[in-house]
Structure formats: structure tokens, C-alpha cells
Image 1: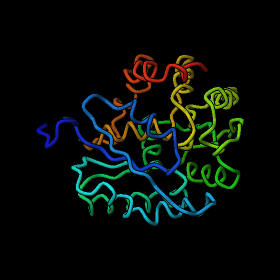
Image 2 (image 1 turned 90 degrees about the vertical axis):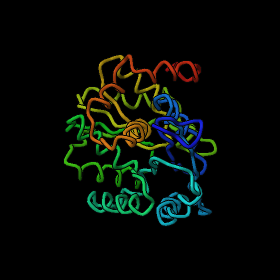
Image 3 (image 1 turned 30 degrees about the vertical axis):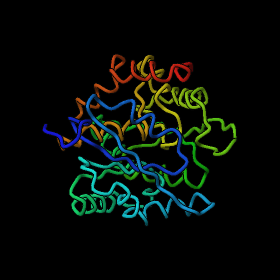
Image 4 (image 1 turned 45 degrees about the vertical axis):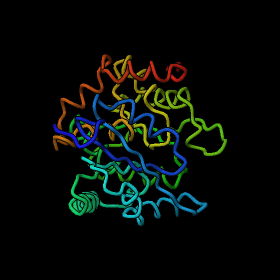
Length: 261
């Protein structure tokens, strides 16, 4: 691929994440294949309540996409699941397809990326780890159930407080919540929410033969599929889930303190 700029021989990708999210960018970035460049923009809102911020992030999406100006993007990810839980899936797909057509490159939501993972993996029985308040957990579970999967159990990690109840969650609490779902024998565990740390728990579960995915994990997969447009490629997703996946070594090297769970 001939590239206009020095970095990003395999593509330059955009990612929109909530304003104070400290988790999404590092997790997605570390998973990307070589020669892919990630440019990150912030979804911002002055609203003090989460419910209103989630609405603002979607309502003002054109403003946030415009922050990339004329950067030669190969695709863009909208990494906030809570903003699209109200959609019927066909409406969400149509919305982001039309948005992509308007900007000239594919745009995928976090919700779409996870739904595509369910399809690619053939998962039907889902254990859900939710970091959300009760009203948003209920909305999340209903959204996933509309894909035709069965939500067989829901667990929440122990919050520690701080500047944000989700962004301050720790790996051990997320893993413990996932482990509470294991007696139910799910096909797949979904660690929902782009602000919750998930890669170390995914690694720990994979080492025990348990498949788990997250918003950030699935978004990284979808971003890497954007240059080819093959968004339901099950082999590429399966490779990311393998215990010898290259991103795992990169994660251990970059974030050694976060590998202890």
C-alpha cells in the first residue's frame, strides 16, 4: 500500500473514546498489528450525568469526527457502547453505514463490533460482566439479547471509587466477576464497557480455556479488518483469542504492572 505519510503503511485509523476514559486507547492500541496507526479523538460533553453524556456523544458525532479534519483515515471506531444500546440493531447498522458513506470510510460502533464477534464465534450462551449502574446494565443486557443470544448470568466487578467508578476498576476485580460466571458454563464471557480494564482478564481466562471478549478487544479486531473490509472474518478473531497471539507479548512488555491478576 502506497501511503501519503511516513507512518501507517497498512492504514491510518481513527478512534473516538469518551473524554476521561483512560482504558480504551491503551487497550486498542496495544492490540493493533504492525504498520497500523491509531489517531484518537475525544467524545466530550459538559453534562454531569452519564445518561446525558451518552446522548451527547452520539448526537454530536459529526463534530467529533470533524476533529480529525482531512487526515487520510482508512476507517473509524466509535468506542462507547452505552450510546447505542437504545438502537434496534438494523437501525444502528444503517446509521453507521450512512455515516461511513458520508465520510468516505467505514465507521463501526462498539456495539456492532461485539455483535459481529458473537456471529463470527457462533456464541449463544453469554456470561456478562457489567461495570455499569443498574439502569445501564439492564439496557446493555436487553441490547445483547436482541442479537439472539442468551444472557445466562450477569456479574459486576467490585468498584473502588475515585474520579470515575468504571475507569478506576482493577484487573483482579474484573477477573473475579468473570470467574463467578464460570459455573454457568457460558460459551463466551463478555466484559462490557470500554472503560473497564479487560486485556489481562481475557489473557488469564484464555489460559484456562475460557473464551472472553470485550468492547476494546472487539473494536481492535474490527479496526484491523477495515483495510480489507472483511468484518466477519472468524479466523482473524480466532487468532486474537489464541494464547500465543502477538498482542499478548506486546501487552506484557508495555504494561508489566497490569499483567499481575
